Length: 549
Image (cartoon, rainbow, N blue to C red; front, side):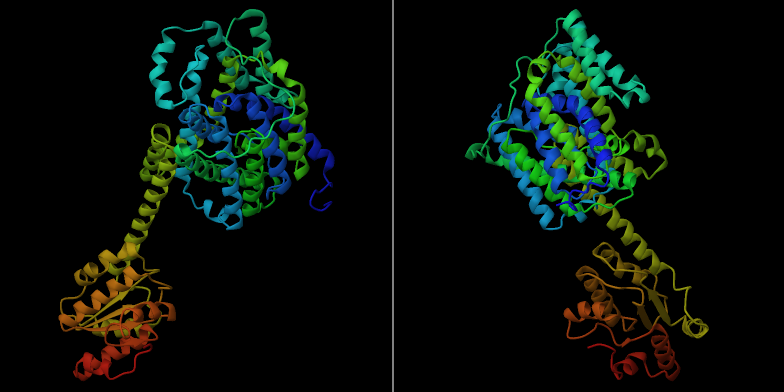
């Protein structure tokens, strides 16, 4: 246990945990309110996830708790279920179970494969959703919980502005932006804005506030299942699990860069799953690794698990006596804090540089952003990943096919160059420059026919640089062999490894074509000998034993 809970940096971990806890306090309250489940749900989620993800996770310096992306999903689910909190907490628990399963199945290493434009698009879309949902509260209203409905409601809110709420919200936003960094070491800007805005509202403004808040230890919320709502709950659980996993592992990468360490992605998923499962059980909202809180922790000296656990225990101590104070927090103040959260989530660094990068990446990012805001997160991420994969396959296929146009100028020896030059009018050599995939299969036969010399009697396909091929590419090779046979040409194969040969032989009784040779040089020698003897290359090659059968 002593090794598990490294105490070598105890003072730094406690300092980092306390600082992160102070930063987390207003964010947990604000995100709890934004979810529709209330401020205590945000605090309970921060406590459960912060403690257990730190204890069992794979990123010792990471601080976990409610995050903007998770709250967007929860708010939508809460609205769809007409305020049934038990079903929402059930979705949180199921998301935790799914994350634990993902960790044990080793899914963590694959989540990193999501392309950056997709991540940038849906994170920016989530930031936009948070801002859209808070605009009405800044104007002193309680808007609907869906982005489109909130946008439709906005003209109504603009026609009846509560200027006191607007002043408080904009003032809160200004404090979070303008608070000096050196003061932030002692009092984080969100907490300063929360205290100042609440105090000002008490003496000067009549604006909507949170109202009575229960205090004390949470009660248990056992899983509840409703046949009519089962699909919604399961869908939300899947979204929360995947989104939380991505969010946490991205924050883990940030922690690695700052602490010069290396996280265990699968263990981190297990820790996040345990934390979210317990959060749902005690009435807390789901969360993930929180980038800002993690950065604050590391900069304040936190390196180990004790820092995350300290942050959670501080919040627990606050919860036991927070209610009477938190009841007077204005909605507009929390809205100002959340607008800052939304602005921080938007990927401004990429947007500033996007015009210098590939246009397709920018288009993909904008598409995912739009789908995130106007459709849903799962559709956005799924569409983004599929389109990015198809674009990559197309690019690789184009590169593979392009190599067929350039007859090999990288021949390994003078003898190969001399052999090819001496028979170039009757021999066409095609070099496949890398792995053969289904993306290139459709064009292989066409390009071999197009770039084959008019007087070609022998074609050589060089597989020396092909480590593997899939079924689609193998069928394309078989089509090339059939075309060669029907046009009276001899087809020789060279440099085929065992894996490629196994795939090709699996479609026939043996390799396609009229002969297979270990090296390109050997195939060229056979071709020139056949042409020199004028016996017909096909007759000669059929009399030789192929390299594979």
